[in-house]
Every structure is written in structure tokens, then in C-alpha cells.
Image (cartoon, rainbow, N blue to C red):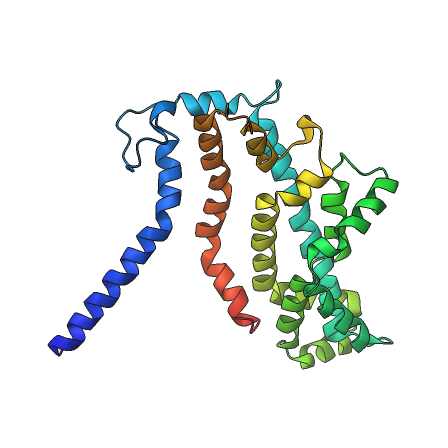
Length: 279
């Protein structure tokens, strides 16, 4: 290999590694600082603590007002899993209807569905809050879960529509000749072939719901209903008396489920996106 090409490749790889370390530094600092005494968190910027302590994890796990962080984790897991189940079921049904069935004003409904993808969440926040308040759903998990069971996330419907359109319609015709109705075609034919898109939807729904802070802050005010994100926010004291060690320790723990799911299923995420043509 020519010397110039080798040098150029080495410079490129060095620059990529340096940029990667720069981007990872805040996360590494967060993990490192969760093991430092409070007196060294902001004075010691090194990634290797001079003094180690696990007290922050014990103190942080105790939670607030008698409610431990274990309860917050259970609440987040419940909302995330119910959201995943709702999105997988209802978005796949809506996508099957748009991709395979014929009904009046189908193109107009599909266009309206696409428009909602570009609609900022904050535009609908106030009317949604007023509506849920009239339903007496505030301080319940219903505003966070019920929309997921009504095919609320248009992005996932579009993703599945793209995938279903790639499945030959001749399979549907063969199933019809064998006596299958539309429900059987959906369940026995489309769902098994749709598995990569369903897995992608499940992973993204879980990550986005777990990390959501804004919606949960709007609808949940009782501490026993708090999620992990609201629990971490409650550890922060605007007057400056925050227990920074406990706050950082619980932040590290909150990353664990997301990181585990991402690294365990990253191959399936890429496969699902690639096969729908949205890469």
C-alpha cells in the first residue's frame, strides 16, 4: 500500500477515535463521578476517582418521601411495556389497512396520517391536556398509555406500510384462494413476515418512552406514580442543596435498561430500518 495512503488512513482513524472519545467524555464523567465523594465531583475532572465510594447508590436508591427508586423503575417499566404492546398491535393493524385494504378516502386518510408526523407535539399539548383533564385522567398512566393503543405514532405506521408494500400481493391472493379472510391474512401471513419492523418498533418505542420526561412531568404529580426520569428530577434542588452524588448514581442506573436493549438488539434495529427502505 502506498505510504501516502497509509498515512491518510491513520490520520482519519485517529481523528475518528479522538472525536468518539470527545463525545463519550460526558457519559464517562457521569459514571466516574457517581463513585466520587461529593467534595470531589466538581473539583476533580479526571475519569478515574481518587477516592471511591458506593454511598451515592445506597442513598439514591432510598428515593424520596418513603418511595424508593425501585418503585420508580417499576412504574417506568410498566408504562414502557404497555406502550410497546399498544404500538405493535395497533400500528401494525393500521399499516395493514393502508397497505392492503381498499376503503373510501384511503389516500386522504393516509395523507392526513403523514401530516401528523410533521406536527410538533407541543402544538397538541394544551388541547390534549384539557381533554384528559375532563376525562379525569390526570395523575394516572392513561394519558401515557391509551394513545399508544389508538395507533398514535404515525412514524411506526409509515415504517410498517413500507415493509408490507414489499411483500408480494400474490401471497395474499394465494391465501384468499385457500379460504383465508383478511383477519387470517393479517395474522397468519403478514405478522410473521413483518417481524423485523415489529422488533424495530418495539425497541424504539421502549427507548423513547423510557427516556420521556416532558409528558410524564405534565400528567403525573403524585410521587408514588413517578417514573425514573421524574424521580431523578426530584433529587435536584434549585436552592443548591442537591445530593449530586445520589443524582448522578441514579442517572447511571437509569441508562442501564436503554443501553442493554440497544446493544442487545442493535443488529435487529438496523435490519428492520434497512428492509423498510427508510435507511
